[in-house]
Length: 465
Image (cartoon, rainbow, N blue to C red; front, side, top):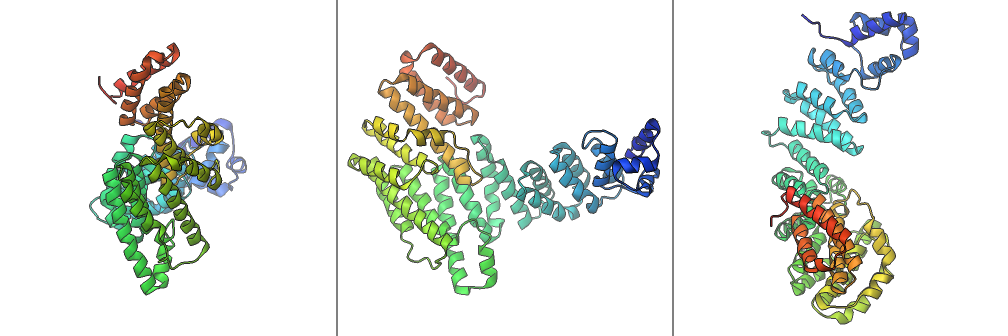
């Protein structure tokens, strides 16, 4: 019968092979003779720190013995969180995700480990080690799926946050799976969760979902804001500090989202009514710097959107004033710039307006946000890239309609490629229809790239002829 290898046996074999004494090896590993002796004789277990020193002293790559560590000190003995916790942190540091999966598989049958594993996941999440944290959240969520606990809801919230990315199908699955858990979160945490959900659905232009969630967020925020100022307890003030924004923002942001829904549906009059609601902030009791910052933002958004509703309604006389407002109130790093210029292109294509001079004026800004990296905030991570894609599509339509085919096909193929990689089915189909309208003007290179992308789209089943 073949004997199961152990780290102790591997170390003993190495010492004999290299002709090293315990004292000599201890000097190399930075460990005293007694500890090395205890490890070799099996009288003492080892920590992951000691294992890393031994591995380095043996000239082996980091984490070389981690699988054996699991066999020798986690599976074969009663699990000890004082040993497991630093081991998990080290695995996360080395990106050894499969090793973390093995640990979880060995210990997750016991619900007693869930609280500690959750704490480790939270620490890893805070440190930005999201891939490792995701495994722990998923492990805890699976173990506690019948518990209906707040910890389970937080796990689902973190899983949702981590899984949101470029793939629209994946984002929809993540949002759909998380949404039922929102009500299980702490009442304060629900506000940020609803905000994030609304922005994800907004990026997918699922306006019914955005409208429902925005109203729910606004209602909950109103209750919390009222309770905060009626009770004015230290506990409530501390709870409010957990939020990513001042509490009043969630009330006004609900109105702003509803205005966006109305705008998308072409109901500009109702959108303006919501705009009046979110800019009227006389009821806000706080006066601190952060509050003033957000009040200023809502005032800015209201002024911009008032121009937009008039412009998209057909009042093209406001275009000059709108453009001047954009130029004087923002800079090229403004994450709202893409939305502002998108509105210009929507009006240009809808009402056949020549905006060549406007595009030339903002060329630097357009080049900047086309290359801008999204931040961790759900709005700039999801909504801004979606708006950028829409802007490029409208830009492609504008240039093609005006006979500037080199620019038109350049932007159109860029959007087609992006839609394919992000599983944006509706955009992919819109691009195909636009290309087919103007394909007689496409050069050979553009046509070849188009056919390659369409073939890939058929393989991915994004559309059928």
